Each structure stands twice: as structure tokens, then as C-alpha cells.
Length: 413
Image 1 (cartoon, rainbow, N blue to C red):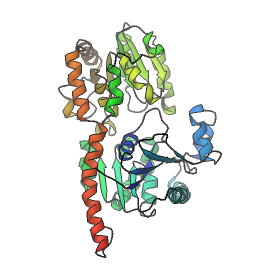
Image 2: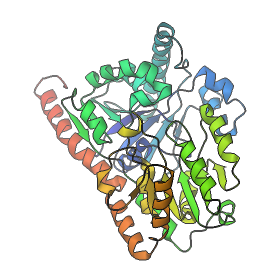
Image 3: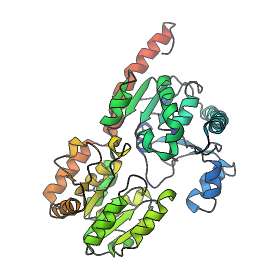
Image 4: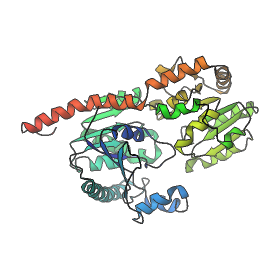
């Protein structure tokens, strides 16, 4: 286990979110024995205008503009996690010269804010953990007095519109500056491992105890879900490029007696697709819900679905929701978007409307306690504590070797 270190985590997502990333879970695990400074990805000037009246963005924007303290501690007595909201940066959609100029300016401001926070917290020689924030990671690696840079690649750069435009050319530079690279899927491992000598595949995990609450008889199903007729075919996640809107519209039209429930934020670029979903009376878009309420909503599902399209992005992912559904005891039906061999005998994989509906019908028939226990047992093996331990076993020998080199007068690398 990694112990008694300071970690500075550059994250592509903010700490406060309805759908935590793998970075959130890993930093919580590491914070049991280490101290963590989580750095939100800076909001852009465009974000400041677009979300100026959005309650979910209110505090984040106030911290961005200095109207609230940028540094605060997460209220968890068992873990020491500090969160820093840095100054704003330019939007990613700008042409390369303007973007590079804006990124350099943002990196300089962010570096100053991180170093100030480190001084306040008494942090020295941290491990810099780049949680998919490729642009800032590439600019800040080697500039924070860190003893090691770790890049955690849990998505395909090419498939993320908000980062693909500039991320493709910046990621190789970040990897060259990183001592260790972790990937979350076999596809990412194949590509990143081909160019980095110390690259490791560690799959995504699950906060098992949290999601297993869905099987607790005392866990209530939220009223906005409990009032819907059964069976409930549910999805928990973002509604964005990966989601197969056409498939769900066709399936819901074919089975009007099933309730199709989608929980999670709609990304602005896909608002029109969401409006099409709303036209069917048995499709219910409940919007984002706090992560703390996820067990109750999953308890109200009869089947959990992952209806992703096949793309460069989805072929390289290992979705968090897969283990979350299983930890909740749910049967899972998904499209063949990625090779997920460990789950082949536990989940249903189906392509096309007819096959997808048939798989859901089979899943509905497999809700007995026997099948539920098997699903939960598989998820239990994938707890985030096991993932953090696996990463620690890789990092600790390298840190020890680094200390030995430094004591003998060599360079940290």
C-alpha cells in the first residue's frame, strides 16, 4: 500500500459531481494513508458565461473568480483530501496558436495556485497524479517539485470532443514526462504500452459497499422512481456521444409496457437527442442525481443497461457503471461496444433492437437471489481498494529505488 506520501491530482473533472470518475475513487482510497490535493480542471471563460445561472455551477464559479476560498478540505475525518479550484482558462475549441497561448497562461496561473496551496498544507516532493487532464498535465509535469509523475489514462483521447482537438498532440509529450502510466482497458494498454516502457493495465473498480446498499431492505427507492410501473429498465450515466439514442427510442417504442429510466446529466451538444427521447411516454429522463442517492435508484431498477455505440472511444473504455450495476445485484444488458471478457458469463451482450430486447427479457427472468449473489461476488472482487493496492504495489518499489538513487547522489529518475 502507498503510505505517507503527498499526492497532487490534476483531474479532468471537478470534485463536486453527480458522476464521480475513477480519479475520485482512487484518491479517496489513497487518502486513507496519504494526503491528497485534488485540483479541479479549470473552468473556461465560456463555462463562466454558459453556466452563470446554473445552481450546480454556482460555488465552482465563485471559487474560480475568487469570491469563495479556492482551497477547502473535504469533510471526511477518515481521509485527508483537499480540493483546489484554480483560475479560469481559455476554451478548448480555439485554433492552435490561441489555445496554446491561453493554455500557457492558464498553466502558469494554476501552477501558482497549486504551489500556494502546497505551502499552506506543508506539502513537499509530492507524487503528481494526472487523472486524464492531459493539457495541464503536460504543461505542469516537472514544474511542481514532484518526485514522480503518474499519468492515469482512462479514456480514449480521440473520442472526447472537449479534449481531442489538442489532446492528441499533447498526450505523447505528457507520457514522455511521466515515470509511470496506468490504463483502464486492454485497448488503452495496447496503444499506450507500445510507446511507454512502464505502462500498466489496472481496470476500473467499484465502491462496492456503497452500491451494495441497493440490496439492503432498508434502502428506500426514491419517490420519482417508485411511482413508475414495472419492469424498470434503467441507465445511470451521462447522456452524450457514447449513448445509442436510436436504439433506446426503437426499444421503448417496441415495449411501451416497460419503463425506460435514464438518470444523469444531458451534455449540451446532445440536448436535441434528449428531446427525442422525451417524446415517448415510457422514457423517463430524471436528470442528474447525487452520487449518494445512486443505491436507491439502482434498487428501483429491474435491469441495468449500457447502450453504447461502437466507436474509437467506446472500444477503449471499461465503464464504471458495469461494476456498479453488478454490486447492486442487477442483471446487466449491454451492446458489444468493447471487449469485456471477464463479464462474458455474467452479463448479456446484444446488438440491434430485437436482440437487445430479447436479452432484457432473459435478464428479467434472472433476478433470483442465486444469480444476484453471483453478480455481487464478481463486483466485490473489483473493489477500488483492490485497485489502489495494485497501483501501490507498482509505485512503491519505484519510489524506493528513486530514494536509493537520490541517497547515492544520482538523479530522481
